[in-house]
Image 1 (cartoon, rainbow, N blue to C red):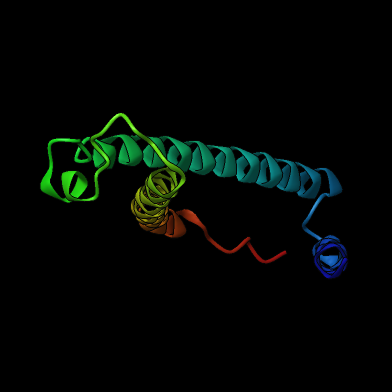
Image 2: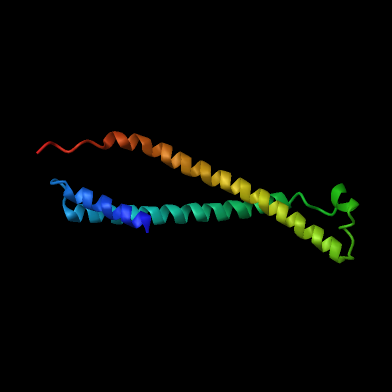
Length: 130
């Protein structure tokens, strides 16, 4: 509720300015909310996609022909409870690594977008004095 109250205070402060029209403020907040929703959806979709790609790429290196897998007896057809537990732990570690890479990629993309928006600051100017 604190963020809602802050927004209400900001909204009232902006309307107190004589050069601001109420419809302009409402349009601004509408565009802000739509942009926020789209940006969040894009980042979540990218994070999900990158985590799936990372999991697939890291899983390619797990093979019954690798020494580390063969030494644990995971290449046999007999899967007991200990073997299944190890496979679940291995998949969990692969998923953690894939999520870390996906998080780094998402952070890099959001940083690049924000850096690209810095030149837009130069387009803003103060309103003419009335």
